[in-house]
Amino acid sequence: MKRWLIVSCILLLLGSLVGCSTSKTEGSSEESRPQSKAEKERIPDYGVDKIIVPVETKWYKGVQAYQDFNVAVVKEIAKQNEVEIQIKEIPTFEDSVKAVKRGDADVVLGASNSSSEELSETYSYLSSALYFPDGTQIVPSKDYMLLVKQGNDNLLGLLNDGIRELDKTGKLESLQDKYLGEREKKEHPTLEEITSYDYISSLNAAERAEQEDRLAKYKENKE
Image (tube, rainbow, N blue to C red; front, side, top):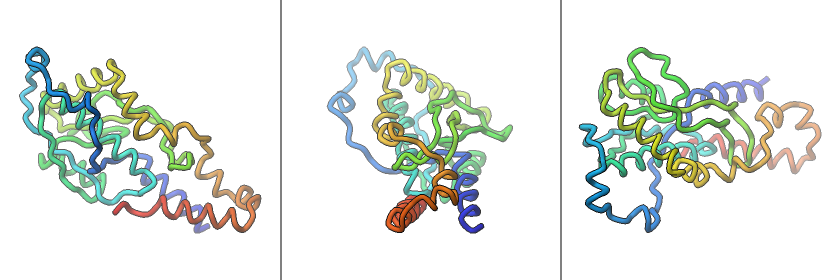
């Protein structure tokens, strides 16, 4: 009973979001290349100078890569439009939603739906199940998007156009492969399957211990 309660709690927590991250990644020489005058002239003026991004601190290590991916997507959009990014640490996904509603932050990352008339949804930028690093599926496939405060049409336009541009150029696929590719290439038993009585009974003592340790590490909060 305890094992099934833990599984249910994990799925409930992870099912509504992908999360976000403050981890920094090194850019390639192409990413760091200064824009030419012609390129700068082609940048639309959305009237957005800065995007405040709430970053959740209470997050499982096993899904850290999804947070990294979400932040990388927004950073890439901001970079292409010469917009500043400010990271703001927020305890939970619910807190990030509240912060955007209050106007203390600008965008909610990795939402599967808005569930609020106060928020507007961008286009989806990820359609995928969620997996632990070993390939275990913890949430079935969903569409994930960004959320902005209702009426913030300038930011909504910037993000939507940015998502379309990243998709058009192949950059979105490249980021997904960079952050999520390894786990997406593996076999994908579900969390329910590998914690079922029948499956656990089929393992020897060493295999059971290894699986318990692995899943426990995935459920630890990020540092």
